[in-house]
Image 1 (cartoon, rainbow, N blue to C red):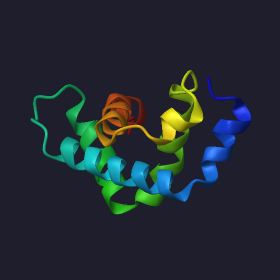
Image 2 (cartoon, rainbow, N blue to C red; image 1 turned 180 degrees about the vertical axis):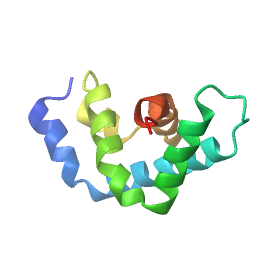
Image 3 (cartoon, rainbow, N blue to C red; image 1 turned 60 degrees about the horizontal axis):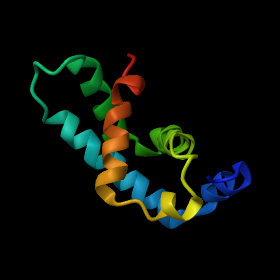
Length: 100
């Protein structure tokens, strides 16, 4: 289990942040191209557009969510997560972020 101090320390790991940003952009593209019949599609599409236009505005909220959602893991497991795992967690949180 990652201690809070370790989780906070991950904020400064630029390589991990970069991975999260690209994963977030990839998820935004997945949402952009999903079927119109997907539940909450209009709001999800708005979130995807916002991410693709200004990823910097979404990186920190998404990054924070990933950190606390994985606090049961140790810091090295969080940093070394597979790209597919990171994308899956972001995709699972899209409805949470897609509120407007």
